[in-house]
Image (cartoon, rainbow, N blue to C red; front, side, top):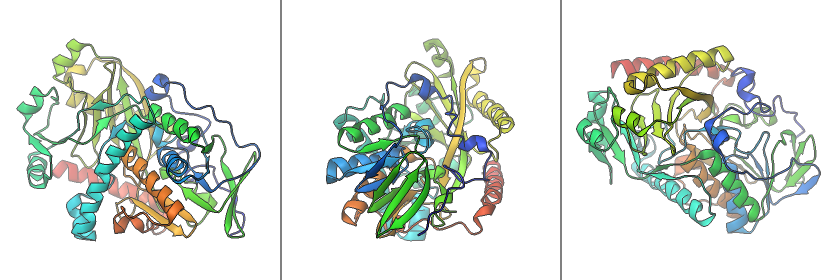
Length: 448
């Protein structure tokens, strides 16, 4: 493999406005404003050798570094183009819940078999437990809010589908029961409650992972975009503006922001999709009661272009939604207005409540709509495509990547996840695929 300069230090150039990839401009999120002290890590400034090089300083990469160092006794080095948690890991909604596929479990069973569907369900629930365990064992102060996950039905058909699809400990609830639980929103026909899952502060969580990984011996280099990746003598050499890291193995864990210019093997494996969040000022207890929402459980709805929402510690309310074909400042303003309209429609008692924060980021989808954690070759390992549910699954797949790199196997993974994510055909047309998908999802939401 010859040296290949990166067309961009992060992301897929041309898919979105440069603002989406500007590592010099961290988004002004509520998480960044309210975060505790983060890790004190310096950019790479010399030559380093590692047992495993990790590209990406988000949840997956830092979980991999932690598990490699703590559980396998190896010395990894993390190279992050921006600051720790700059991408989706530090700006998401803080939903630690099962999932990670765009396909339902029934659809996974039809496509890949009932056995793999059951293994994926077990894995995604174990992922929530892994996060909870790390919060305890590594003393990560991420403000966990227990209560499970509530999935609201936006139509009678969706509510009927919940009744048919309910599994395990899941419970179907009618609107009156939801109101009694302090989860009243307008326009919904009931909900499906999944007891696994909780909310957390994602920036404090990713910073806590970094601190824990460093404490166990991992080296972490933020603000160190890789500008060339070469293969030398069976190993890997990564050059940044400040230094070089060599390693016999590499883990690529950059999600929707993976540096596609570094290697043709990375190009076109994921479709980055925008997700957008608004956060209100703190709501008084009277305002919460007036709307009928006092629960701290996490929630989302059954729209294809879904909304997700939760009451945060201190009384602020977070409301997010998928969609948008541009990351320009003008497009961001338009999507903020759309998201605000949806928020007011579902929570009308809060129409006059000030919105203090608004930001966006990218989540990654795969062409086959399932997550992947696989070998690209015997020394290169790659995880991607969490479909907007990466807090728990990214943590779990970081541990699975560590096992792959350390031992060569990850027996807990379903078979379909152990195959590399397929390349999108004609990857420069991904924006057109997304436009068609968004139009189809919007139509489906109106008809269902």
